[in-house]
Length: 589
Image (tube, rainbow, N blue to C red; front, side, top):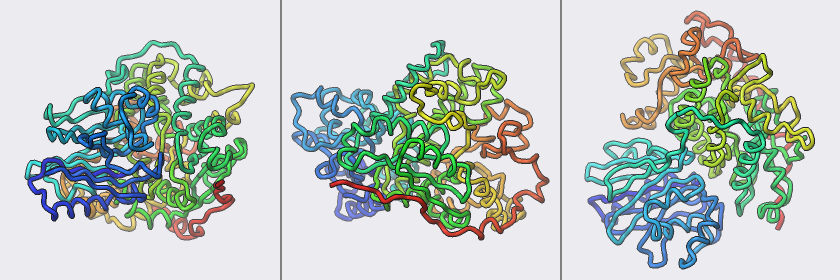
């Protein structure tokens, strides 16, 4: 991932302003440690911090068309860039970068070119011929992006809050699947798939069609000029990503450059469910497996850094981001710059355990639509920022546009969870890869119960966080929570603890408004809490809050006085974060 910052139409084009833009751009350097660029045209500034994945030697940004009248700064990957180049035979490209096509597409197709891009991206394009500009974000919001406005009438765009929060009067998340045009003076939605209306689809389930769509999505994301690997938790989604990648990896350019054995990475507390399952999958697939251990105290010590980087106070996002943040640092230290991950599957297929209580297929489908639309606030934000904190890029094949269209067009009755018929959560996905002749995964892995990442790394992780928060947030503080934090008032000591840290880094009202709120159980939307009346007394985003569903479900709710009282020995007795059984990364010259 790269970092982009644009200041457009400001009242000051002085050297002092240029220095300020450079200063703010450096706040994003963790996203792109490989090179920095800044272009100024009058009162417009486009800055870029580059993480070089495609054409590392010549793809520095900002990028231009032939006469340098069109200027672009982009964060992301355009997977179909070679096909798009073929549609531009009269254009001369300056680099081999996948993003080099954008300025030229704009010349030929105007603002509509955005619909032609197959990938993940946040971009700002400046047309210096009339000083107009456009801003666009990918369909689902895999890449992070914010928009803000200065008192002088300027428009600000940044990959992260920290690039603009101190200089804008108001700012907010830039909505995914939308385009801002200075000519039109507002936003318009460029991404309008059939599922977005939440109409109930009727296409019969075809496991082979679903399988091929996912394989195509993975193959696209093997485009890289640098070493890469897969994140492997041992759950269904990451295991399928690893399995499909391992099948097609040998024929890729990356394999010819760096060697034909795939690297896999996992993180967890000692003895956690994920570590055991991931090792088994890695052995089955023959990957070079890197297993990282962390302790509860390691995670607690990192919480402030995590909140600074992921820019949220959402409880489940912080719980899951912390192990990913720690693991990303280890991965980058091995020389890896890109990983493929399994985010998005649970939203598309209703994989969270609370979907067991969906009352009918219509509500099941609508909830999956709601979950996909909110991904940019949760799992996409986590995957993007927890990895980008260390200059690591995460690619997510489940959120491929074509794959989503296939998966969301399936008649939702097929996705319904029906234990009496042997259909557990994500049965349609599991069945699609249940190949007796050429198995993708061992059966018990293919049909392993869903574990949310923050649970799978070790159940004592969440218990330890709650205990730490209970030691740092008093009952008296909780009594005044609604006065201190009237918006999205924290209802638990853990939430209060995270909120205090967030407000210290991002004290503006606009910042707190970028974080979603509302009741949730096991990562549900507030609407789905209505599916089971018992859930309203057990509002926790952990999968173990799905009482009567998760095999390690929480005990019934304790009295308030006892809540959060977990023995502190689980925090202090484990060894520090270490890497075990991890072969060195082999890079062939």
